[in-house]
Amino acid sequence: MFSKVKLSENGQIITLSSSGGDMRFHAMWMRDNAPDADTRSAVNGQRLITLNDIPADVAITDAGLDGDQVLVTFSDRPHAVAYDAAWLAQHCYDMPSSHPPIWINPELTTWQGGARVPAADYKDVMTDDAAKLDWLEGLHRFGVAKLDGGPIESGALMDVAAIFGYVRETNYGKWFEVRTEVNPVNLAYTGLGLQAHTDNPYRDPVPTMQILYCLENAAEGGDSMVVDGFACVERLMATAPEAAEILSRYCARFDYRGSSGVALSSKRPMVETAPDGELTGIRFNNRSAAAFTDVPFDDMPAYYDAYRKLSELIDDPAMQVSFKLNPGECFIVDNTRVLHARNGYTGEGTRWLQGCYPDKDGLLSTIASMKSMKEAAE
Ligand code: FE2
Picture (cartoon, rainbow, N blue to C red):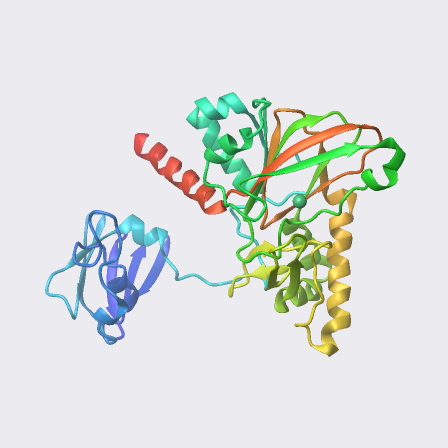
């Protein structure tokens, strides 16, 4: 993999050369990431030292290549440490950063109206690991997936959550009922659709995933609809980047006091980014948005203009995917990214869904561990 190794800056930098070019690493980074048994537990891979155990002026005193390994000796250690060359190449950080101010992880696929939501059959996912991994990866990449053909039983959604993770209990319980009796005498009320939203933005931490599982859907209409919030920000970045930027710069406020003993509130931006500009989340909910008080007076008009632009994109049918859930079917959304809504009803009948909030760390962990088991078996 590497053909040459060179030390420079008094051993502060090591340069590894290959046919693809040079990769530089700092002595401190290399020492902190040493894989030897004195630095990392051989049992669980956890680091055994703190940064303060490494001298601030640590340097590399010698380095060489040995097959697929890079051997490095540090000023604070008598013995060479062996690094896997492929691991170093995978963890290289020596590359130009050319990100726009707000950018989306290239692992994710953004989508608009007309996109096909990843879907699978309940029995396939429950019995076939390849089908399960494929479906979970689709869920992660698109931020939404459907599962069809499940049991029509109260609580069945908990078995769906157990496919990839653990449910977060809230004041609504381990799961909650979404029941609507559509009364034709009062259609004006019951037939109301909802604007697409992320759930519970007034919580911190916010629920990271949601399952909505259908047990009855005899009403006309009442389709489910999803919108990719990341695709909306992408469009905002293309047409009005200053709007995306101001929504990420200032916090919104959300709150909920709908039942006794509950007073939830949060202060978070509607468009949340990491310090390097990676888009990490969307919080959008017209019903629980509180008075915004964290936007400076002079910026409030521009903030409201940006909020309106985002709201219009979310309401744009060109961004929306709708589907009808039948009994035994469910959909799952990444609640930090994909907004969901219920379209209005046009007839009478009963609609009964159950919902719960599994956490996304379980999804990512299940995907990563299934992938490494699959690679090890190949
Ligand atoms: Fe909701």
